Image 1 (spheres, rainbow, N blue to C red):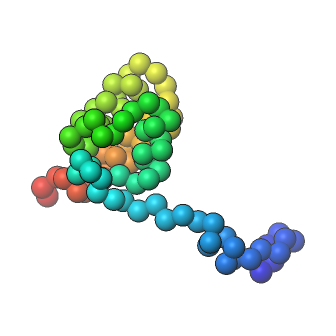
Image 2 (cartoon, one colour):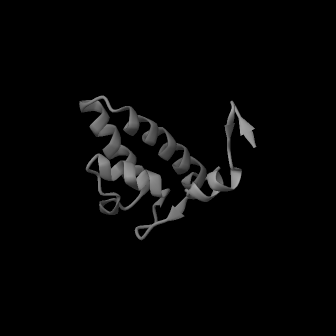
Length: 89
């Protein structure tokens, strides 16, 4: 397939994409691998928290002290996960 004058092989693109599904972790917190990578980069060990809400609160505490767009986006996404998975509707 040619896109913008470049020959692109869709199969190669698909092979390089790593699935990033939500998984229930050891401490029963639902996270993606990319969430864990973001937390590690910011010095947060998700295994220290017993639920997603307490992890979100820790992220929010950090955001009160410093501006961090990556953690802000993560906090928003984790809040949605918390709502859809742990809130009685």
